[in-house]
Image 1 (cartoon, protein in one colour):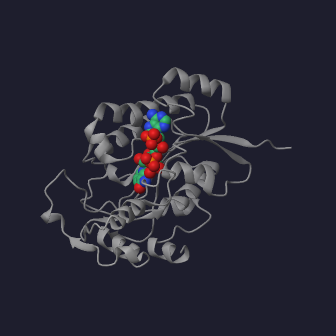
Image 2: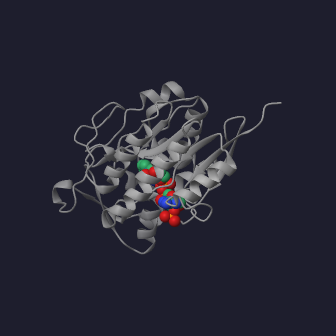
Length: 280
Ligand SMILES: NC(=O)c1ccc[n+]([C@@H]2O[C@H](COP(=O)([O-])OP(=O)(O)OC[C@H]3O[C@@H](n4cnc5c(N)ncnc54)[C@H](OP(=O)(O)O)[C@@H]3O)[C@@H](O)[C@H]2O)c1
């Protein structure tokens, strides 16, 4: 009888890690071993190595990260420790087993859009720089996988990690949001990202694969799509323009070409509004 393969899922109390560990059907023959920070602090090298030796997982799906850009900007040293060094350590331990790192569309500067996996990166923030460095660490092993995704929608255990959760929290506090009508992303549901990453891992994909929603939407269009579903948002979405903005550099169009993912996946990646319509 074939034994079940056990895959560590790090960041299991986060948006995508929780979806991957608890919310999606897994490929046949696989079981998730959820690891939240309370189970294992990934910055603690000796503890991670000891746990790996004791557990002997068959694969690692690495979703843990300092994922919010302002946090990384405030503390670049800690951001590198969590996003780069913890990733390097895990990928090293996983030298002989499948390993997938979740990465981001923000590795690109957003000047071009519709990025392919082999396009040149151009990180504009500390967060993006740490993800570029983490990707490079993972790609030392040609059998390992990097999955870049875009804005993820979902319900996180902490209630504040999905972009939809942040927008709803603002509306519920009565705050109007000015959202860029000229900044473009490919939003996707975290459960779709999680299902895709599992499939890629189980099917033996390696290198970089882009996994994102197939619809290119501005942040304003995303806000309008959510407001159409949530009455508390009606009248609380304004259209802004990047030219009015005076802050840290922003990437105007980080949309991702997902042709490579489509060749691997056994299901179609949906557009965001199509997915919303099917998941009331
Ligand atoms: N969500 C998106 O829209 C999006 C888009 C593109 C790429 N990504 C990437 O996808 C991955 C998952 O993102 P997410 O949205 O699920 O993030 P998230 O909700 O912030 O979850 C990340 C989790 O990792 C944990 N973590 C961070 N550092 C750790 C450490 N040193 N030891 C143990 N646990 C640690 C965090 O714990 P604490 O809460 O205690 O810090 C958190 O529970 C990340 O690599 C992110 O860069 C996400």
